[in-house]
Length: 254
Image (tube, rainbow, N blue to C red; front, side, top):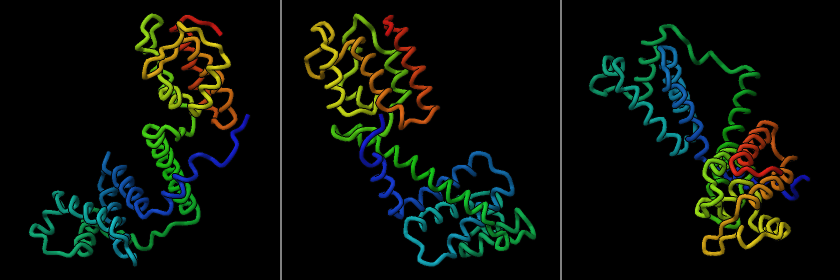
């Protein structure tokens, strides 16, 4: 059964696309990727990226701040100190000198993107925005009762499988934990519990309310069936493996 209404992440995606911070985060991500394992050409490429960005018109303050930070880092390298030990060169002059030192004769201005590279960049930016939207959505779901995660969380399923103990009610999940794990609203989860006709021994009515292993398994199974249409194959596979692990831990077979 597919979900009705617009996708849950749409608001977060639109917010990120409209924000100038996206440019800053995307640029910072490129630099972090380069910083993991940097060779001579990657240093030159980083300097060229900063220089190209600084030459753009109407540069936002957020992007300017990231560029300034990267220039300071490049100035602190051995090559940066060698060619401009007193910081007398302007940022563009320093970056030109830096690029020439690492990649002599490289005319980075002529290395324009072809259409395939441009398409890859657009797709990469879109994936980044969607990843950030998911993080933002999950953060809101953690803080606000009425906000629901975009999809079930296999990692939380594994966590529940390792934590739940049959005879220790303090390890049973709360309504909020079930919401974050299943990607279903608290109202939907309550309705599932009601339909299961729980026994008194399966409920902890003190705040926070907790629910026994049998109820948890049925809630997870029902939720995965509800969300199956909207999940990709990998996520669904991970969720099913986690569910089977939970079944083994609590020794209940569905």
